[in-house]
Length: 111
Length: 114
Image 1 (tube, rainbow over the protein chains, first blue to last red):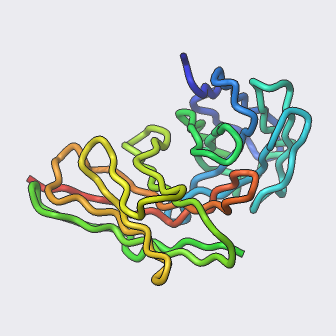
Image 2: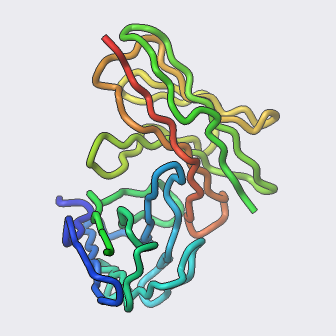
């Protein structure tokens, strides 16, 4: 069991470029989440998907889009990257409302 | 709306000393409570959780936390810390009837000194 995997691990973008962060889980979980982690602010929810075929906004959705491709995969897209999106991004999954399992993170720098 | 406050951003402590990391939450509904640990350059790992039942919950590596409903707290304790406990600790809350969305505190860095 790989758990939750994320690609890429590191990425540097120029302002205005786009990219997609990939996340996959092999635990047959229904729910998946995208967070960003910034110093002193804990983790903030960007988007989540309670089940396959549904997505909802979290606390900080502006500038992001998501796709729940199937039960295993949940991607996060930055259409036009901004320096304020420099952060560490974590994907997580859970079986309904139980504890969440996190991936190793993607460290994104926007210059 | 729910919120979580971790009262200390950094807690320095000597090895083998006891430690308490404080967490307070606010919510108008029943909640589930979690403590996660993050070692440097890694993702978050679940340390322990309170869903229902006994208000004292324990982890496999000696941490414990007590749910106090009247004080809306979920403080994390360990009677004797090790160097390997150095990490960032996050308290989180979710509504008991929700989709599982977590609200995190700001995090507490535990620095264990030899």
